[in-house]
Amino acid sequence: MHTYSLATYMNHFHSGDWTGVADLMVASAEKLASIGADFFICPDNTIHRVFPQVRERSPRPWLHIAESVLKEAAKKGYKRVGLTGTKYLMESDVYPEHLLRPSAAERERINAIIFDELVYGQFRPEALKYFQGVIQRMRDAGCDAVVLGCTEIPILVRPEDSPLPVLDSTRLLARAALKKAQFALQC
Image (cartoon, rainbow, N blue to C red):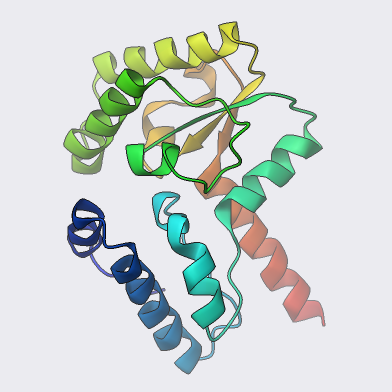
């Protein structure tokens, strides 16, 4: 396991330096490859925004978080899925454009909750209520599941607290990695 600090990544996010984000990911991949890693994962949805750049420069393959989520959604028969996460994620093409995104105002508020509260370990009832309202709106718009597309959101929004079934992206990526590792051990 290797990662740079969130602050290091955020410096690149805030300046729109997505190549810098890719450079950090590739540097991590090179370190991990040098000690024998067979493949890589990144549990941060937002960073997947630079995966096209990273995959072409990476010394080993990566599992893509959105691919893991979409595979599970298809397996469960979900037809219309909503997306929550950072503003950077929701305004990117990490997930297909047919996923329902929150409104611009909702994206701003969700982003503020993530970066001003959740990353600091603050899980306020008001934040949960806000997420529940957004997810309920998605349900009313015809969604049959919602992606929790940020590592901190599932700590706040548990499956039993959500108006829709949840697709916990971090957990689904971890399961995909375990499956891939088990397969590699069997070969």
